[in-house]
Amino acid sequence: MSRYLSYQLDDDAGELVSRFEKYLSGTATGYFDVDEMERIVEYYLLYGRTRDSLNAVELGKKLHPSSSALDTKRAKIYLATGDVNKAYRILSNLVEDSDTEVVYLKIEALVKLERLQEARVLAGVLIDEETDEVDQVCLDIAMIFMAESQIDYAYEILGIGSKHNPKNIDLLFELAFCQEQKSLLPEAIATYMRIIDIDSYISEAWFNLGQIHFILNEFEEAIEAYDYALVINEKDSISLIQKGHAHFQLNQLEQAIEAYLAYADMIKEKWQVMLYVGESYEKLENFPKAYYYYKLSLNEMEDNYDALIGIAVCMLEMEQFAESLEYIGRAMKINDTLSDAWVYMAEAYIGIDNMDDALKAYLKAISIDPNQADTLLAIGNIYMDNAEFQLAGKYYEAAFSMDATLENIELFLAVANYYTGNYVETAAYLKQALSRNLDAAKLFLELCPGAEKTFLSTDK
Image (tube, rainbow, N blue to C red; front, top):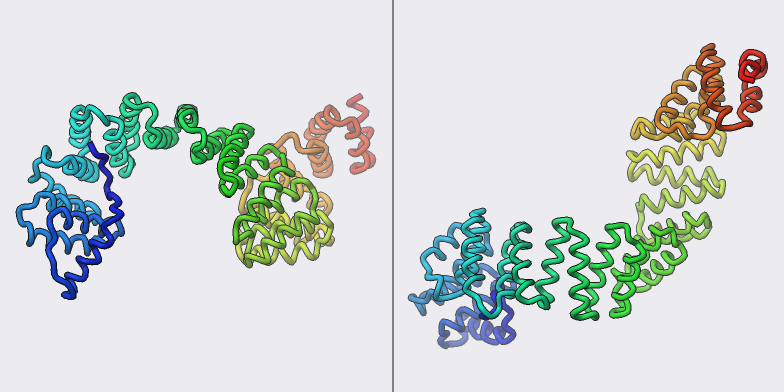
């Protein structure tokens, strides 16, 4: 049995279509038999020219009114244009035994009509009738179901085909795809390994294998798979950048940068990969180089929020606070709804000793995302410095409830409660602070002079 494809490539149809179009324009005469009309219709369908294909069918039916093959083509056109009911009415009047394509098209129509049980019955008959190429039939049927997101049945059918021919690589690729869609990732890995065992020079198999390992956070295995893909095709840019991402996830930042820069050499638009390089250098705390690559990204892509924020962070780290504010401001003109930018703005204001605006920025940050223990702690510190101990205690409590491991949080709570006269709470928090940090007593007395007799002496 010849393999069914929705649109079959006919390398020689171009000349035939040219002759047909000259005939339509009146610049040539001639005759077209049924087979030629079928080829013309398929050619138009292949290139998405459905109106031309339908016109060709209509002319073909005038030349060959009894041709069921052209009726089949008309049904195929209706399926392509979404007129499924029209397609099925035509197919219902055709004899299935006369043309296997009719059966496939009926299955396709039934799946589109969500008459899945009927489609499965027809598919089962088609498989049972086949003796030589069961795997190909299963693959073709599975593709019909997959096109309508019927992954479970496609997976079942592909499993049958795989048993009949364990070395059908096309089928195994689709089987692996279904396994990925069903989140059967270990099974998908095994299937890609089967493909590689059959032909180890299929770079797509290595790449897909790497992708699954990446999803599973198995980054070393992912890198190995990407490396094999790159051995087969050294210009495989997608494998190269994915390799960079895997190194980044492993905190192997120098290797990540090497992969990113090699990828940059392969592409025209580089602004996105320059962000990755900048981020890698930022994690390495090499802020001048991080700044350099973020700037390259910004120069290529204006209004680049991530590059602007990256530059601002680098300037913060290099204590260029006023310059940092400039870039944060530019970023916020693009998007002022992300809490991180407001935190960076607050830190820049602190750097230039503008505590009022720093507080406003911090408060804006937690209004966007309240789940920021560090920001709540920073707000408490500003209120503490302003001797607004009630407010300081409120934000310290919120930070403590979110993250009890914050450095010196119990000490700050003890101080805030001391100045608001909550001595029971002061004693309790001070006890916790002393259990974590032996220097807490000294720090407490620096912040609360004269409190030694009331608290520390009772704790000895």
